[in-house]
Each structure stands twice: as structure tokens, then as C-alpha cells.
Image 1 (cartoon, rainbow, N blue to C red):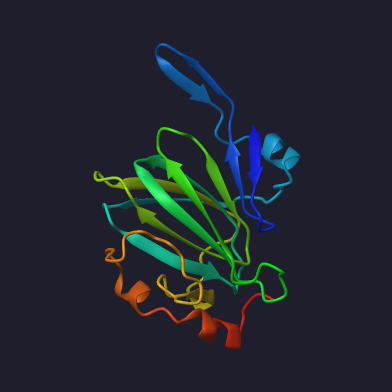
Image 2 (cartoon, one colour):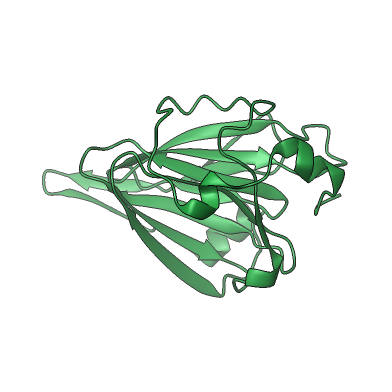
Length: 183
């Protein structure tokens, strides 16, 4: 497995070794020993799956009551994945990284606790995502930051995405900074 680190400490893009021939390819998408060698020693306790139509934007979400780290992969289609550092004491507080995840390229995006996460579906036929998480979902400890926050200025590309009511009404990053959940 190869790992690509970003300018923000924490998130990483992980690419498994592919075994290809004229029929296609095979890879081990997740092997606990290899992830431990990469420094990801979290115990994953749940797998999640989502299917989204073209132009759907989900996020920016985080969980603070039971902080949740996740491995995200796109199994069909293409997405722009965004991870924002929301750790108040971090030198990269308020900075973000983006990654293009594609179903025909079996990569994982590592999103540690202390980061907000969101994605935009770029493929016309939609996208499927699979997540491994290390904490159970806790409604009482979930939060979000508005996807189009002007301070963050994330270059989503599509400025008229399909959004849930919840995502339309998330708070600003300025509001989050008044009471940060990760310090």
C-alpha cells in the first residue's frame, strides 16, 4: 500500500497494490496489518454505505460526542471529497484538503476525528461510497459547518448542489469557532 500525506497533518490518501491483467484487477482494499504499518491503528466497528445522485453535496459533517474517524472510498462514480481541520489548536485550523475519489481507482481517504468531512458527486450516473468508522453514530454529538462558508472558501465547482435541509442550514465556521468541539 502507498500513502500520500497532505499539507495538513492527519488526513491521508491510501492506494492499495493492484494486481492487473487483461481481465481487470484485484486488490486487498483493507488489511489491518498494512494499515497499522501506515500508522492507522483504529479499530473499525461499523461499515456505512451511501448512494447519491449527480450534483449531491453531503457535508460538512463531524461527530464530537463520540469522535469518529473514518476511511472513505468511492466504489462507483466520482466525487470531490473535502476534509476541513476543525481542531482549534492545530496550525492548520480552518484549512482543507480535497481529493478526487473514483470507483475505478480503489483508494481510501483517511479522515481522522477532529476534521469535518463532505463530498460532491461529480459523475452523471451518481456515486456509491463506503465508509469504515471507529465509533458509532451519536445524534446528540453530531455537528456540521455550512458547505459554502465564505471563510473556508472551498472550491466545490458546483454552486447549485442538491442538499438536505440539514446541510442547507448548517452553521458558519465563524459560529463553530465560538465554541469549537475539538481543541
